[in-house]
Length: 224
Figure (cartoon, rainbow, N blue to C red):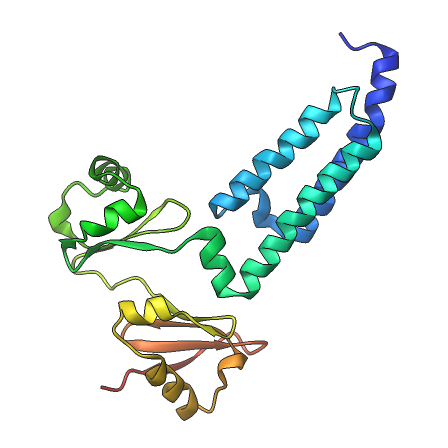
């Protein structure tokens, strides 16, 4: 049981920890505590351990407690900033999606790359409501451990080609397009690559969402 003296010593850490958590959430966005990637989840666990472990440890004073939480939070914010700004950093930090099934054929060589067994793959499909491989067209193992599944006969999931002014070359290769084709499409529309916030391929069309533009996107039909 905590006595009055211990509670008085604990109170500053509680207040500082609460304020730092609010500041971290405010700076990193609402999605920070609902982790999208593995690095988010690990970062949240470590941050919680730093705060929780130091609260009842009398050997850790308020300065050391504040400094450790701020350093870790700053490191996570810096990594998040770089990941959102540079696609190469995001690929290193979060990893890349791995194709496990393409056009109804299992990509057996990619299961080792994804570090996923066939049994776990089937279990994840069953959890998604798929009971037979014959009903599936494409499956991608995303960097957050989730599966993106395209059922046969359904329209394929939209594929991102440009993210914040950077071309996603992996997705272009997936669709068997080239960066030259993409840049030519942008030039025909008189849109600069650096002005594109997001572009995706869907319904056999290229949909372009410029930065700071109206909500309705431009769209370009693919030219053979």
